[in-house]
Length: 165
Image (cartoon, rainbow, N blue to C red; front, side, top):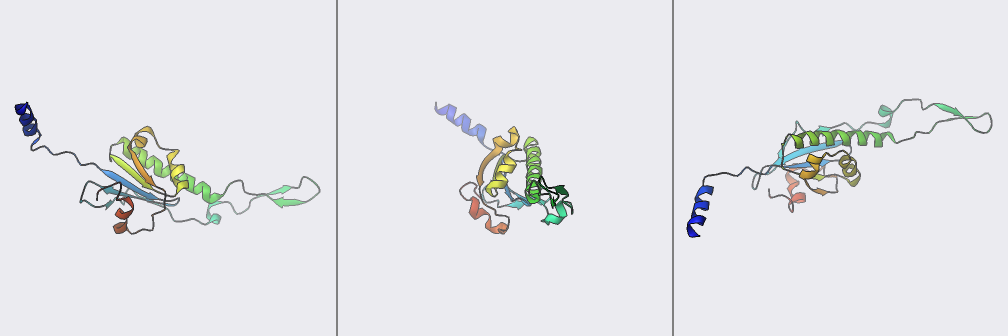
């Protein structure tokens, strides 16, 4: 028994384990930032080329100027048509899908081992609708808050129970 333990110990010497790569996504309906942590005492590295940021658009930039007119069901009157959906909601859904597709691709390419997301509950729900199997397996935890305005140096405080920085 003793020689077996010694052999196992000797075989393990000199081998380095691959670091666990954790991605942190900090997002809301218009902005997403991805940070990477490669292990204890490594801190956070911003992956700026993977982040997606959109300038907040005014409603007038998203929809047509003229909503159209319709005839009244009773009488000769006409009135403006109501919008069926909120343009900001449509833009947030589109953006959430775009972020999810980026993460899906990165998960399939094995660019990270674990994913933790901080986003408002509505954004989390919109993104989750588009997560593929690979990404769902890597999703470790989430923080249902908008942390996009938190300085990078302060972000570890929000994830300290999930990641060792």
